Length: 94
Image 1 (cartoon, helix red, strand yellow):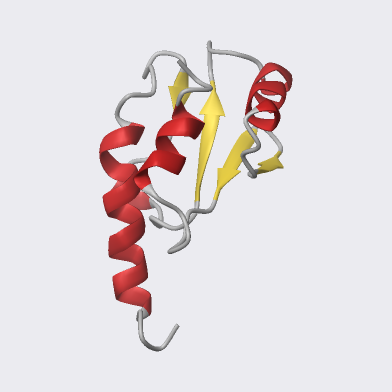
Image 2 (cartoon, helix red, strand yellow; image 1 turned 90 degrees about the vertical axis):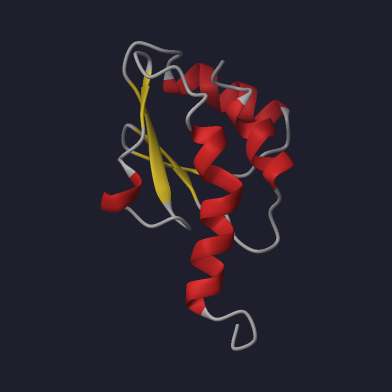
């Protein structure tokens, strides 16, 4: 952690998630704007998209590990994740 630094970890997480999150259908899912959230922890909320139960099945079938908090899918990327990992997650929503 000391080698990476918290700032570098935030930047890394931003780099692997920022562009990919833009591919979520905006009329079906909501993610808070980057300026109002951390890059290493955020929620994806379903609005008119797939139900949480349907998403849980899809995400689990792809061996992706996230948490569920109320109506949010809690995503916590870190240095051990890659852009490809995030793409795999986002494919569950499209």
